[in-house]
Length: 178
Image (cartoon, rainbow, N blue to C red; front, side):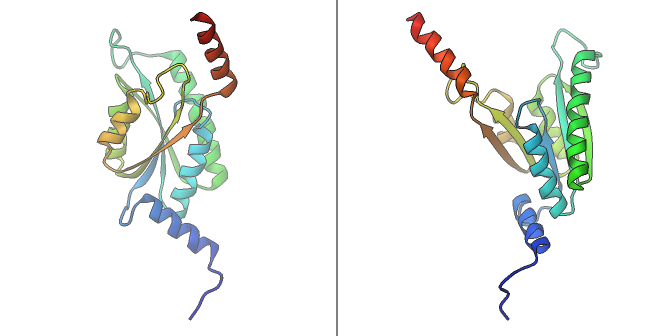
């Protein structure tokens, strides 16, 4: 028997399951950091989770300076996290995906993200990176390399180019200095 047109739902389910891994049974973790990529990552994660009948864990890490106790109340950061997660939950609701929002306070974001993925048995971590034209060309910071090296599951890194007008302005300033 030849099927010329398959069921769209069946295709989406198959695609979602393959994105998570062949025999993966876990959820999807989406890391939110307040960059312009966040809404895209949430939408992508929700689409994959919904198709595979999984849950999305929306994770925002507040890095606490070593000078403060780990459980210090950081009002400004907590309010920002609340705004980010509220927006992400509304996207999940529009997509029709079951989502759980979590704010984690930690010294370093990388280990916190990996621990969250491990604790929730995630099959995939979605993390974004917006290039910064003021840093070295291949500088990924400290969080992304840690997650890539230590995650217990697949990691999808979505990189957005730096803001081009801002980079051109920075380059012109640098050229004028020499």
